[in-house]
Image (cartoon, rainbow, N blue to C red; front, side):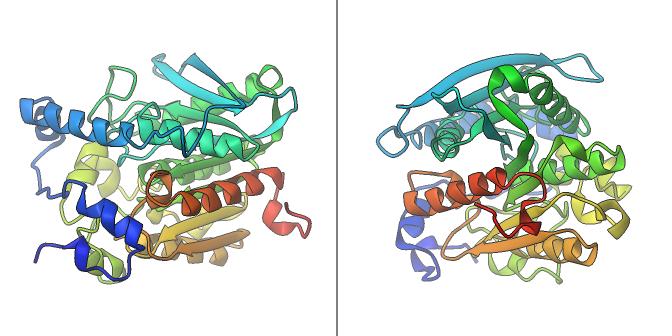
Length: 354
């Protein structure tokens, strides 16, 4: 039965109205990543990408998130180990004050979108307006180009995110960033990459690079539906359709079959998580990914990680990042992320967190 958002009384009326105006996500299984690449570069695929770009650009409304009082810069860095070039969008309040930093990783199932899409331009401004420096990394997607032409499967995107974080630390003084207050944040596929980056830093004993992780609606499991996650049934088709194999095919089926937690963090063991920096998981009530985010939060607690989980009622997948839909909900989430960054190292363990 096709999902009809107009009848979903759980949704905030503004979210319900937005969903009725968005194209449905109706995708089936594929045989290979090569099929996905061919589809993405077909005439229909390019037209679909252009359609979504127009939709996301319409969410960049300066009446809701003004540019006034902010500074903007674009940087290009060299990623390791491939030597490819990656772009980084940097936004901060127009002040000389050293600020906490939100290192932000955009969504798109690790396969598509860009931090330069209108939706993310506005979201970056909103975070910066709350009093943080915001560094948005435009990593290599696995299927459709971001702001760089190359596409590549796992671990390319994760390598780019790790390289960007290193770059931010190296340039913290001239960027006006407090190096001890850098929070890695991301939504959906960016939530996957944020948690994977935390696990990788933990393995490499480099957690000194980050003070915390704050992820929105993380895309973690790689296979859906799952009986242990009721939301993968009850919310299928609510903005996001997941009952197919495209995610694990596009990012790298080999990593999924190997149970690699750096590709799909829900495979992480307690050993992988033990010692991780404080982490916040934010989920949306009407999101098929809701329950896997909650499950990951509970695993963090079992591993002894200082963790918090919040559920935003009446919202669909990454509703907050779409700042024109429910601006007050977007502001609440942005404010919470920046307050978390201002808490410094181990903010969840402190009683004086901002």
